[in-house]
Image 1 (cartoon, rainbow over the protein chains, first blue to last red):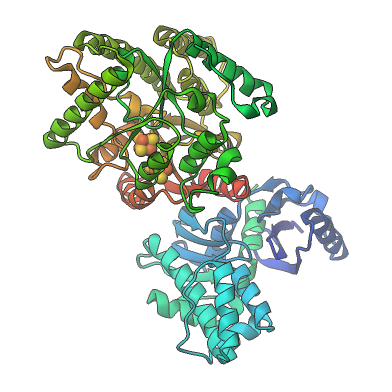
Image 2: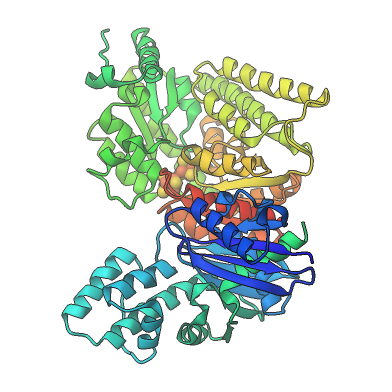
Length: 255
Length: 382
Ligand code: SF4
Ligand code: SF4
């Protein structure tokens, strides 16, 4: 059987998807990226071998910030193009807006007729990215999923600074003041949601469906808060975190 | 007269030392040097006064830490870098300049000139920020003041005839620049944009106008000749990119080179070093030559102007003339005029059906990876 592989090496986790000729997902793998993308790529190759797939002799597209570290990939394609492709198929839409909150960057991608028509990425600071949430979760000594769950029960607290470093000290002073954890978590999530929404607002959203991909798409609360802020429904999908890898696999099939 | 090298001269590398020696020589043969920072500086006036204008825009992050001891961190890298060069005596032209000429363009520069004025003789021309007749009256007067100032300071005579002559040769230089840039309308273009930019930039450091013109013309002719004989370094079908935005000498590799390393080609620079400053000419037959010079400069479509309709008109024409596939705007971090105006440019390009992307960056290397990813994605999208 023909198999095609897509590998998305992000800043925090590496996702791998194998598809068949029809684009049906055969395998999903996810692992932390760790220190070295090269080691991660080697580990993925090994794992695929265990699953009976020889990566060296299978069409493979690599994406994500570690994409150039995959020696057995036939082609490197940016995460923008791959995410658009993957999300289009996952959500079964040819026109949509994809919001991807990644570990290191946040992307807003406009897809028209199944092709990227415009995109935005945050600049070099970590405000508005998954990294921001991670740092704040650490300070509050909770896991990421706990943070968003806590946030859903909080209210009425704000962090004014977008900058991660300043926001960190704001959170610390909130803790010092004895503010409830739920409310601090609420403020943290609220801040990222506002940042992402204002970024998304720059790309005119029109009537297209808005879909959330990336590691945060499992959080019902983030989705709900984003929908509220944007004033339109934001949909997710269980395979959302694999959108980049899935898109890469589909593009490998088209090589 | 005796001229001394800066105290830290021995710590400089050879290229920089040579630069110092070169300018020292100019000074020793009684040459006058004016440091300038902007395309609005009326060059014809300096030419007619026998003063050599040299661009001092800082293009490297080397001197930024020194500048940040006095300037805020969140300031445009071009301003910080330029100021840093003056502080550290690392730029021969700043060091030996008899005069610094600035204009009231953006706030950061304006205020930086004030500080620079405490170290060097600095003259600030007040640039009006509109393109109409009223502004032209004012700007003409402002240039006349400048003439009087120069005449008194350097005991020189600036004649109408001298200005006219300077305008003729400056126009010829502008024409040579435009011809060089316009050959990129060919499809595929004869050379990579990076080379065009470097050639234009280098021309700024040749102080003999005829020599500059010959160099530009020579480069252009030989490029077209090679092209016609079949030597074509740029692959057919390469995506044709127009660059616009802030001065980009300090971020050339991160942006232009990144585009061209990834299968694109920059066919047009609308920035200061490019077409926007070279296109407007002086009407050398005009009765009032000072006014004609003033008028030429007011035609420059820089974001410090409001409204900046010139830039909109020019971009609309350029994307057609150069058969552009996509437009990339490079904005230097914290540059308010360009950052705000980018929204209008996005709209304009949207109406023209052209993909458009803004890259906001500084002189550091930290974001090179992210910038390349964006450029790569942009090219994939075209
Ligand atoms: S961008 Fe405008 S203000 Fe800055 S150097 Fe160019 S013309 Fe002058
Ligand atoms: S790039 Fe912008 S902020 Fe920097 S000097 Fe030019 S106009 Fe001013």
